[in-house]
Length: 386
Ligand code: SF4
Image 1 (cartoon, rainbow, N blue to C red):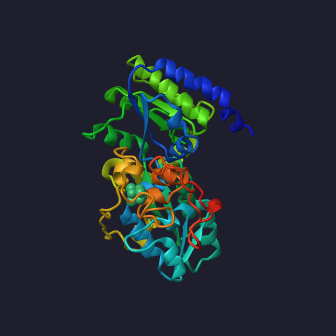
Image 2 (cartoon, rainbow, N blue to C red):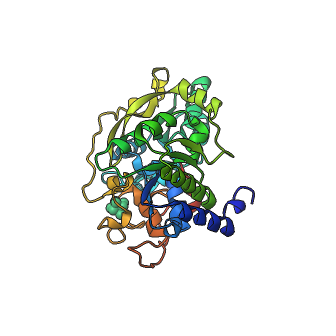
Image 3 (cartoon, protein in one colour):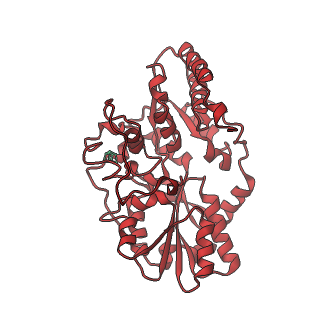
């Protein structure tokens, strides 16, 4: 398969590993920002193949995981209303809110539907003029342009029964927050290739210079990740801190101009809370004033909902790379994909789910997580939200 098989070649992987081993002379800690990269690393055992000097720290790059509890509770409140068709990507249905999840709302009669695109939700709005259709617009820079396009189209079509519940976040402010945290151990970043395919790389050189960290734009297949690590280690050993693009087949320095125009038209930068981490200045988007009428928080008057994170779940520390999932006492015992206590155990980009699914139960081999009966989102419905 083009662009898949050739990036899984074991012989090339061995050569890259040999190069990394030959280069490294002391310990380095690298953070992969994207949850898709985390899953690829754990699934292929890349972290276990690296020389012991190179540690991979898993960052806050799972969009489902960082969506704040407060926003989940707002989604639950809106989805339970009889006039609403609530549309979401499949990942979000099992993310626990304060006392239930979207599956529970659906079981109790709420009209909750899994869609594969915000444009599917827009179509539902056109087909159901007597209902209010709400799309759960979460994710990083990767999903935001399509959501912007959906609301742009809704305005163009004059639809007054379509809205977005927005919880979009941006990677560069998260890197800034990680690097300025007092207990930060990160010395280099593997930046998410799909984010940079939209945004380009212009936001990163200043971060790399100021924090003296290499930032290597990296893809998602095993050889992509090894190449990203090889370049980051090479820079660190030479005392460099530059932005490098190791994913040129998808990323251009200028990003995707059409997507950037759409983002600028529909959204404005805003402070955002990250689940388990807290508020990060300018770390997300909200609908601009011109699109305010399409904001579900405003339309359904749920802006006042405030919630507290449960103390037992240490997902905030996992998302900041402060602990590995297996260091949480609930991991694999009271918290499993069948009985998730936190979003990082639910999402197919969550670090806790990766460690559980790929058998990292404190280093013990264990059965891979079976499908939770009657409640698990089928894998084909778990479309990643980037
Ligand atoms: S194992 Fe469960 S409880 Fe622990 S941090 Fe992960 S999601 Fe939270």
